Amino acid sequence: MNKDIQAYTDAQSPEDKSICDLLAQHISRNLPATENKIWHAHPVWFLDGNPIVGYSKQKAGIRLMFWSGADFEEEKLNVIGGKFKDASIFYNSVSEIDTDDLKRWLEKARDIQWDYKNLVKRKGVLEPINHKSSAFAHQNCD
Image 1: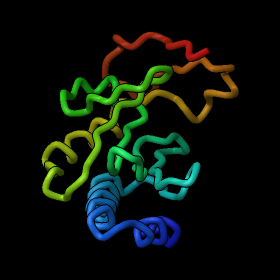
Image 2 (image 1 turned 60 degrees about the vertical axis):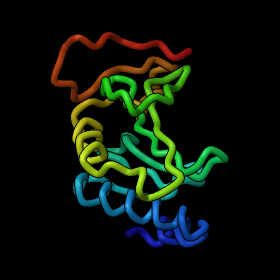
Image 3 (image 1 turned 90 degrees about the vertical axis):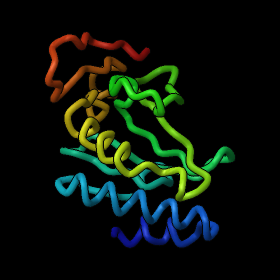
């Protein structure tokens, strides 16, 4: 694990540390082609420079966020972003993590992506990349 992500994890309470450890292990195992680093103060995994998944400590618990998760059509990813295409779930215990769900979501994170990497260059226009379906239209995020 990236040393900065390990430091982030080690700074959490024992239960939150266990959650972060499990998430980091599964993310790294299921998305081996990704780069990971601390980005905006939280662990984030990138595919070709595009952020796809990360987690953060918030009041409601550890938030696992998928940047393009709103298009995953997953009932448990029910914290939907307002401006972009993100979707999240909160965890307060390791026992809440369904690793089969997590694996499926990570596969979708690889296959269903919106181009956050070039969002500024495109002046707030979010475009789909790497979709297996052509049903995705351009999304203006201004």
